[in-house]
Length: 407
Image (tube, rainbow, N blue to C red; front, side, top):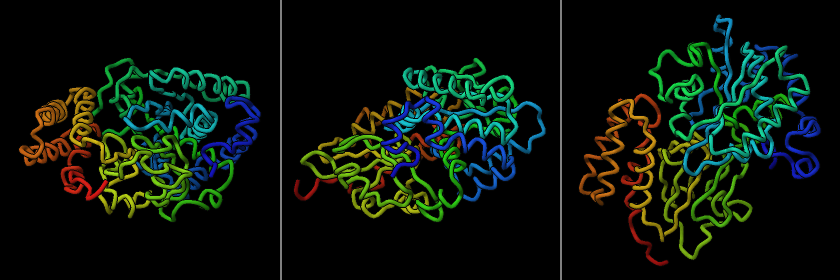
């Protein structure tokens, strides 16, 4: 299935940032179609495909666009969030390297729809090759006349290696030249975002879906996926997997097929059976092999298991894995990446790490659960609110800690 990723024939015959690629993928038609439809019809089309944000939160895209459009401020901004720093997540990198004109076309459609004349691309600092590819694509769009002083200007900003900068309001602070700390909400970015002006911020994959929608139509978009979640999803498979990488799959695919089928993951790639699956990256949820075989890649279905699609990361662990060591590594990551602004996160992440490094997980289980609830309820942003998700999900699944009957 090739939607977000170009068909192999197109990819082999056209350069990623060329005008030929722009035409072959239909993005020139997408741009014209969106401008001819007008803002209201564009938003209605996005609503018709039930597009949720593909960065992890899955917030309804149409609602966000409408909120920014309806703001009466003369100055508005749109931002592409390419600060992909979640462990196990590398889908946006692959998409930007292989087809950067897709999300950039979506970004320009977004700007025209909400009434913004300035757009920003905030890219992870370590992604220097991605940054160069984006700049080359912007040059092509400038030559085409889509980008410039008479249309929409695009500025690329480089992140400084902070995971917290992926949080939308922390990202705004970073662009403004301040420490990347999350802001208290409300006010929400749609009303007061970048430079305290109404701001639309979307993930790379979300914007690429916008370009595809208007390169085709609503019926084409809804032809794959589920009724509740049409379309496809980019999934990053890593860990103990025979074929790691980024795969584009329809929503609703069986998770077991994604893990085991040879066209996708191909199993663990080792002589040991599957022990656990971490869905959604470091802030995600552990599933047992049985749960993984029963689940489908869809928000509604995964919610039955207390999990979510999240950032699209799917990490596999076989029975040679020390799960306690994995959890300690995740705890160290969150303790290091906490911006320290709010006490529940600043102290909570450190306390979790201390307990796990001291190998006192089960002795302090009740304390850890209480701490996780406090962090979820009182932290300002998603880092603190979700930092203990993987830990709690692992503690609540005793079978993850058992040895198999036979290996």
